[in-house]
Image (cartoon, rainbow, N blue to C red):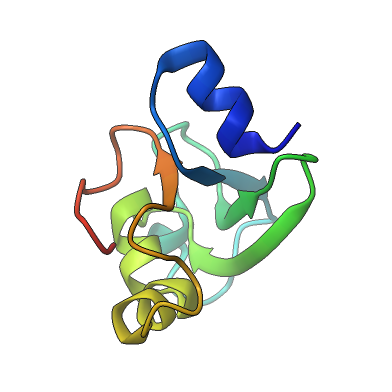
Length: 110
């Protein structure tokens, strides 16, 4: 069963082809600009952002933004965001969606 079918069956929301979220990867205190890497959990980290598909496989990964960066900012700076903005329908068709939590802006494109 495809993710889009599974999500639609459970929620009634059609066309979901991926799920997007970010997580913090702990790092040692950096020598340069440590405050940029100090996250809301009071640790030093870099952010990993990923999209997974219906088989829970990663389909897109972006890593390395400083831990203090908000998920929405990390997404805006990611190659995925740029690709979706420039997409002519080859990445996502009009009836396909990538879902994410409330940290991400709700749009028809990105």
